[in-house]
Image 1 (cartoon, helix red, strand yellow):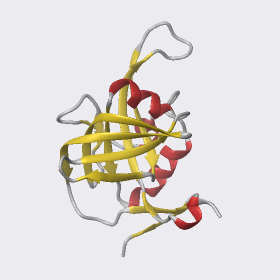
Image 2 (image 1 turned 90 degrees about the vertical axis):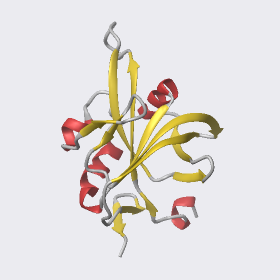
Image 3 (image 1 turned 120 degrees about the horizontal axis):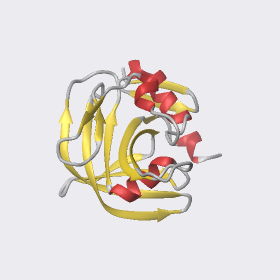
Image 4 (image 1 turned 180 degrees about the vertical axis):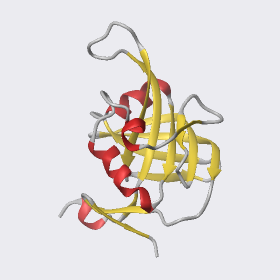
Length: 167
């Protein structure tokens, strides 16, 4: 039995990140914004407020967050589960997930990163520690700003492509 067989359902978030990168087939650097679907995340301290996201080392977002040292946690409504699934299935290395999903980008207030306008709440985080955890890295971010927009049913991953919500 695997972890995913006993530790789910888990709330799904979208993590946004931004960094200057050099694309594979270009000599010119460019600023790249990305969205990543994630269910491995957790608050880790109330004082100071710290939030952790666990990201696979092979993921495109890993490189962006490692480079920029910032990320935004976007808590998403259940009604956007198709967009959440899309962002988890497709790498943002060669496509613009904002354009493909219709999710709207808005600038964070305290860090050089974007957040998602349709999110129910957002945490703007500055990385204070990176912990190697096997095939993942735990990015611990100091929460610089919490933006709460509205209450609504949130999306939870049951297993694979199966989602549920709160009652």
